[in-house]
Length: 389
Length: 234
Image (cartoon, rainbow over all chains, first blue to last red; front, side, top):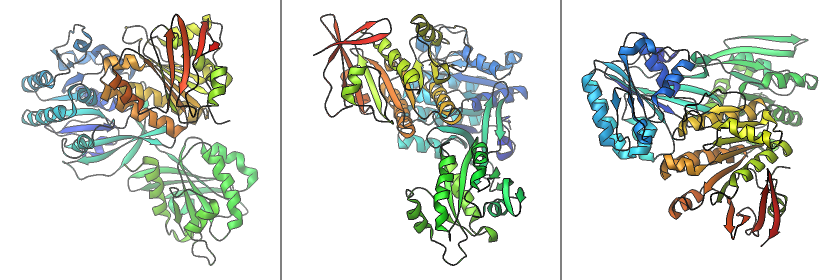
């Protein structure tokens, strides 16, 4: 078993990656995912293993520089760490590495070197810096067949194969093969996007040696330092007396409110751990004079719950205004139609009409005081944030 | 004001503003001043329109680009200017990232370039709260020298989509005469319009296609320092 050294991931994988297995980091374009391969190989070297890094989109020296940026000294592993250089010959430059692919755009040439390395070396961790570049150079079908053969051979020789793959819009067939059947494990690395990507997460899509854990974690990349997890912030806002504090308390495993005369004047704060996703919840006050606080609290949030009192349509104008304040930050949001148990409560579709909301904005019927519908609402927002893992 | 302008007055007034979310190809022969036209669009966008401008450069290092503006005595609002430099590391130069400069490892490393573009987008959109962003790629021709057309198409497919989603403006420079017709028409599918440049009898002309109901007339232009001056109409 080798450990990836990525916080929480080893735990999710039941300790790490067993010898003979293959794993792909399936990375959405634009997300800083290549670090996953780097951190995996560095950690396995640190634990005394052998490591090989296959470079295909830049020269090995630049990869060495990237290790340095993260504060990882790889020179100490001189006899245990090699490069397969599949780039220099592409630009007609000489290479000093142990393994050199002379024609990186021919899958046969590529395969020959990889197979040699697999057969010669003692059990190692072999990381492909960019599987997508190999596909781009050698073709989709050709590369897929070769990767299948490499994975098979690695199994015989007890190597661990790890691939970074950027999921550009390749053919459906290729993407499906990569996601479903070429690798023992698929780790999805994605971005939270509304109009631009503003947060990154990873989660296990599959791992055939352990019970599947459907968890996703948000991360940031620190230089030096590598991958660090963080707890996202979710904002709860809405007009006065719509039930924000009740909602925050109902959703949270622990919560606290700053109240005066029964209404929130500063904020509600709670924490939720639900189905493997944890978040900090911030509730804003509802009265207009506290609007500056909404702006303050919505910074760095990942998503918004807008709570409305379904029996009080006159407050919808105010709700819309509050939404504008948070939406100006471009966050994903879900409308909570609270107090559905009271007579005269409008149905979600009626609220949609009154708000003039597009059909893709979710409106979830809820009775916050009885905890009805709140976890469904949480799941809907998480789905919106992660784009459905 | 929700549209984008280029800063070339005569052309802007015929086009009447470029719609948010547009992706445009800037295509012309070598040595016709495309780079300066792009820099002038960049300067106008950042200084006059107060947009954020992200430039991916595969031809000049970021330091060179910033120096050029200094030499021309043009003050760029640096808080809104980002350059993804794909040259410096390939040449083995010292590469330090800062607020304005991010370094990609090579023009082949489209994944890396994509990450740097996304980081600038996040910074301007989420942190600095700038709603209008321009992405300039100079040039697709260099990227096409390193990667094949399908690869570049996939890359552009993703990023032209992001430009649309974010309501930004994308400008992609292409050298005419360097690529076969088929490659150009493949790429054209991704664009909403084109700024076309041609040279005839030592004179340079520019026009826009697809940005107004019919192509604009050809305007003759001259470049003086950093200025793109329209001197006539064909």
